[in-house]
Amino acid sequence: MTGGTATDVATTRRYRVTHRTTYDYDDVVSASFGRCFLTPRDLPGQRVSEAAIVVDPEPADRSTGTDIFGNTDTYFHVRTPHHRLEVTGTSLVDVDPLDPGLLTCAAATAPWEAARPSRPADAREVEYVLDLYPPEITEAVREYAATVFRPGVALLDVIVELTTRIHTDFTYRSGSTAISTRVDTVMSRREGVCQDFARVAIACLRSQGLAARYVSGYLATEPPPGRERVIGADASHAWAAVWLPGNRWLPFDPTNDKLVDERHVTLAWGRDYDDVPPLRGVIYTESTTSKITVSVDVAPQELPTVSQEVPITSNESAPGS
Image (cartoon, rainbow, N blue to C red):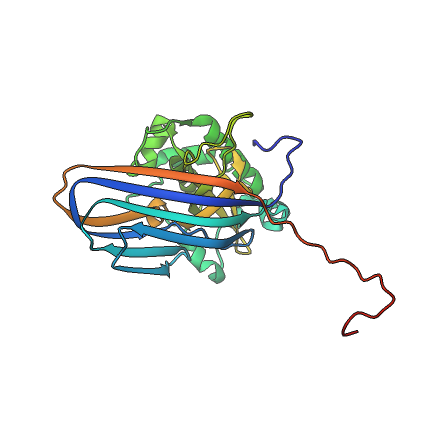
């Protein structure tokens, strides 16, 4: 599994994330309803200090809530006639490295069969085991998973092998699939993009009775040496996570053959992409054509310097002592 170089130091990173979606229409839109998942989650290992969503034209109504998976979603209703709709989510997020304890805990080192939800307390996780409709767990998925999920192998070892297998066996090709492309199609073509590889991994896990969820977010990319960052050239990203007994989740990124680390910003999660699309809506218009433009920027920021207290060296007592 790929990782950093010997000189890399895993440390907390801060990012300014900007996700802008623009719709252009060839005729007037009289009304637009939208729902978006553009606010990163507050998690152990991830802290959101700023978050805002700006809609242009200004909505007549908007609300922010929490969905059944705990994600923050925002609804809006634009009543102003318009030819262009622009939705921009911005946030400031601190992300910690993956907790090493997650890789050495008993649930990760035990045989993978022990990670199947089986107790009454695990009832909520069973939802992540169930297949989708139409079904994604096909015979091709079962056969592919069987080569990795051998009896008695530690869960962590299985996840690492599955991540590497998908990375090796499938070719990343932008534009080769669409949101509606089924897992079975990706399996036969052996190509796709990050969301396809995450969904293949999830189908494999569920075929073995394990709980798996789809995670949407962002991946901070570094420019080649000597080159400047291109603002807006990043993209949304997706990966998978497997449930561990004890109610912890191990996230992994098949696209990049690695476990999720401090370069990944978690936005939202659900059972599949359809649960957490960045933006979805309905418009009222006579327009026959439209154009969508998406720009994502994950800009590294300097972390504030932690000030240190100066010890009292005088012989006098400190106030209040």
